[in-house]
Length: 271
Ligand code: HPA
Image (cartoon, rainbow, N blue to C red; front, side, top):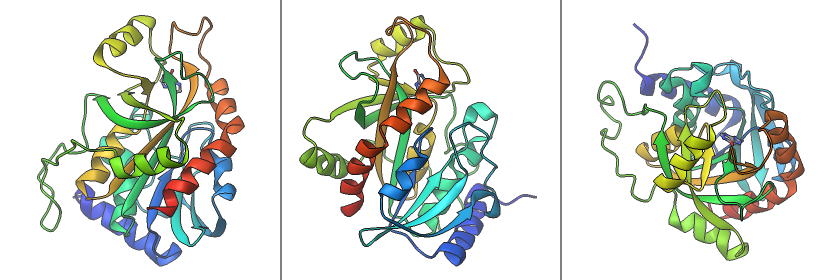
């Protein structure tokens, strides 16, 4: 019988610690963000995710599949340049495995980044937005299944302040112009229809994407402080007057790397 997801994450955590040491924070990079790594600090070491038990090989264009150990001005940060998505037909345990492993390996802060469509025309392509809250519309949860085993927190985690008010205040303190928004996590695999975007607007979403909402719950469950940063790569379907394109998503990410790194450095310093 394969181990439960928490025991599996613990085994991955042991490999990460043995190979890369311990880190204060883990940063999960969104599509097209890999160039951010050298702008965060000095890379001390790196490890292919496929060398860590339970990590699948990343397949999405724009993800490098490395775990980087970075010294960000004295703060050791583990950077995951790639993530598993539900739309790749990974099980939910696999989607959150990396975040669980990182927290069990000692990362007390989890920083989740993503490329997102914007429902608010004021936040156009290239705009960073702090995630203030989320709508998990993926139809699943990392808290499904048997009760977490002995030694792990129980299932019904409070997620009222899922995205740390403290770390959002840190970012806004340095960059007062940054907006905050509610991120709607969709199963994805295709972009949304304009009718779905109107539905999401009614539900209170400001941002839409295909990641993050499961990882945030898994991280909070294990007691980590969670920070979320979206980069708007396009206005959501029906709002931008042209079709959506994954390559545009990646190009916008690459073009915005400097700005994103500035924000991440400020938050990392307070992690
Ligand atoms: N929808 C869903 N995911 C996305 C989008 C979008 O418009 N842009 C980047 N990721």
